[in-house]
Every structure is written in C-alpha cells, then in structure tokens.
Image (cartoon, rainbow, N blue to C red; front, side):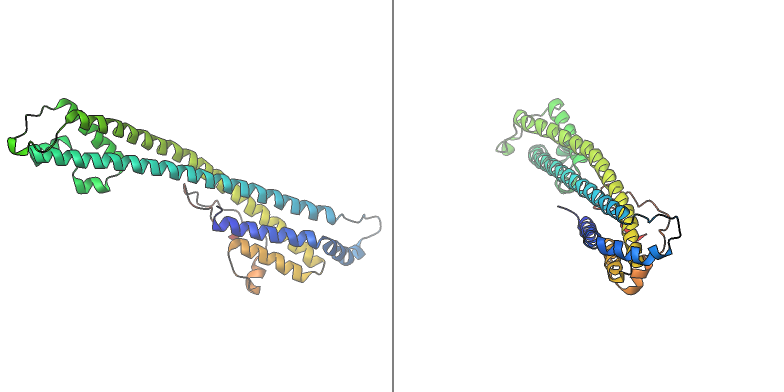
Amino acid sequence: MAGNMSIRRQRAAEDAIGYLVVNEDEIVAGVTDNLFPFLEEGEEEPDVRTPLRLATRKMEDSLDSMIRADKTDFEARLAHAKLREELDEAAQDVRGQLVNIRGVVAGLYGEKRAKEIVAIDGPTAQTAQPQLLWRQGEHTVERLEKETFKEPDKNTKSIAFDRKALLEELKPAVVRLKAAQNAVVIDRRRLQKVVRAKNKVFEAFDRSFRAYVRYGVGVSRIGGLDDLAKKLNTALLQARGRGTSEEEDEELLPPDSPEEPSSDEELTDDVSDSTAS
C-alpha cells in the first residue's frame, strides 16, 4: 500500500505527463509561431518536439522508479511488522511463565525466596521490554537449575512445584525470545537501508519532476498556452500537497533554490516533501 505522499506524487506526475503528451502538437505549433519569426538568415529551426518528448519520458522513468521503491519499502515494513509480532508473542510467553513461576515459589517459600528466583514482579513484567524479559528469563533458568529447594511445608503441598517441568517450558521459551529479538534487530538494519534508498529515489523524483514540469510550463507559456501552463503548475502544487491559488502558482516560476537534504530519520513513513523547496 502506497503512502499518502507517494499517491500524491504519482497522481501529479500522471496528470503532468498526460497534459504534455496530449498537448504536444499545440505546444510545438505555439512555440514555432511565436519564436521562429525571429530566426535570422542562416540559423536553423530548433527542434521543439524532441526535448518535450524526452522530458515526458524522463518523468515516466522517475515515476516508475518511485513506485518500485515505494513497493519495496511497503513489503519490507510488512516483513518487519511480522517479526515484531513474533517477538511480542515470544515475550508474552516468557512474561507469563515468569509470573507463574514467581507466584508458585512465593506460595511455597515466601516472597523473599521468590524474588531470588524471579527478580521481576508481576506488574513490572507486564510492561517489561523483550530485552529485560530475556535477561530475567535467563536469570530464572540459571537459578532454577542451580538452587536447592527444601520440601514444601505440609500446608503448602497442594501447590505443584515441578522444577523440571518448569525448566522444560521456560528454557526453550527464553531461547525463542532471544532468537526473535535478534531477528528484529537484524531486520531493522535491513529496513533502514530500504528506507534510505527509498528516500533517495523520492528526492530524485522530486528534483526531476520539478525541473521537467517547469520546463513544460515555460514552453507552454512561450507557445501562448496559458491554460496548459496553469494546469502544469497545479500538478506541481498537488505533488507538494498545497492549494492552487494564483499567488502560489506564481511562486513556482522562479529558479529552484539550492537543494537541502531532507531529514533522513530512520523508518519514517515517507520522505519530506522536497518538492516544496
């Protein structure tokens, strides 16, 4: 699924490309009528049509690159979300087992003894991050394996305390949690690379789109096609997510300001609107 800024860019690009393709003959005819009378003897007539076609092809290529980058980013985020879900499930498993073990040990041997075996209490476990749960899980496994436990008092024998059974469930759960945690960390690095690559593609698209649409605006106005120039300006504004007032239209005509790198926050949903510069 494409993000809002990706959809906005795509729609604006499709509009601009369509305007230039459909009105190509009118642009060429208008530029020819308005400028060719000023040719001096010996000067050749310039080719108006070819640069116009190349500009639309360049925009089409940039648009295709942006769509592919956005799709790759979306798929990478889906894969990462699945790993995060697996991590949450593994953490919840360890969390539940630690709370259960602490409750059993506390019922048999008291709260002080329980704290030695499971250092994390119930309320804390409910909000603990996977890293802390993994460390507490390893701590509890180590204590259950090494500690000695006297026979429970007669009045507490109804509480089941099968240390072997507890370990058989907890140890693999802790291993799964650690593996899930490592998988998320590794995949996050991969996702960061995907996001950075997407940001670069979006920034390249913005530069290309702005330059070639402004070229279209210029030749349209030279050809006397002011309505077409306005439509192209509107496409630029749509890519920026702005309105379409006359004042804003005119703001698009001066030369581009020097490019400033957008903030490259890892894992942002979309690159910043560099078409706004």
